[in-house]
Image 1 (spheres, rainbow, N blue to C red):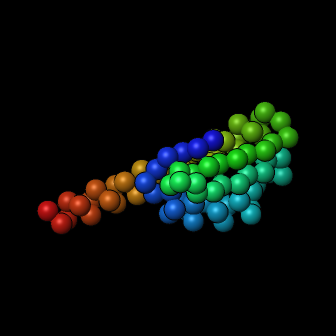
Image 2: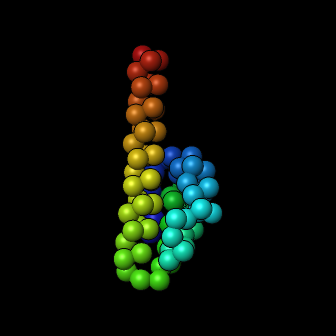
Length: 80
């Protein structure tokens, strides 16, 4: 799965530590930055684990993306 965001490098650094401490052994994940977009790969033992892993990573990416967007917009408002 590929997620395009202007904050890909920041999100990658925030999520990378989570890869080494996955709560379930049923899901394996990797994330890379390719051409400015986040490339997320999940491998799971079953569909339930795949869905749980996908939901977890997507929620982290979406939450981080929204936070960074808010920080950027508030920074722009301060300079006006």
